[in-house]
Length: 255
Image: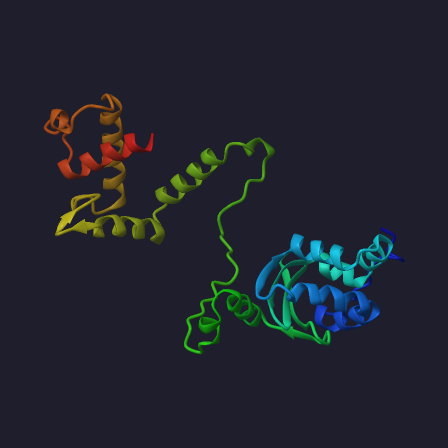
């Protein structure tokens, strides 16, 4: 699309700032469109539902294409979903990846109000449970953006080898004499049921001992058939019975 004829949204503009003018430019069609949005009562509309209602409200293809090529079309095309609680329609707009804006429009007079993410989520919740959404004591938890610090693949040769890549990273982390490795060891030692250790016994109280025991268990278990009864090799393993039985079981369950 030619930039001279496409929608113009200045960097400093927000959706809440630009949407009122865009609505005014197509007020007749937008009144019909928003009336259609709210006529079915409370509901959650995905992007495809918004575009379907727009197509039905603006039947003339030429007028509809003209609208979609303008700023309003850009806004609606960037809308991922909308929460309808008559007479309001709250829009979740994503004009750029990772960047969201939220606006609430009154279907009666097309007044636009910029809202926060929490306000949008409350509108969304009202679609399903208005009593909960209106309760000032209701619990709201914002987990924020998920930003894992795990390494990312950088070589094309790594494509399709994600499991090997992950295994190498985990192995290197476990082999490091770091606080994170000690935390894992402490966690394994803490797992117990009615006073009996579930994963490893108290003798394996440092990383070298744990690594050695795992290598011994792996070597011994690899030589046995997967259906071998525990009682047949318990006395020959040379390992602590509780630790070895769990190691052996884990090996074949995981394969």
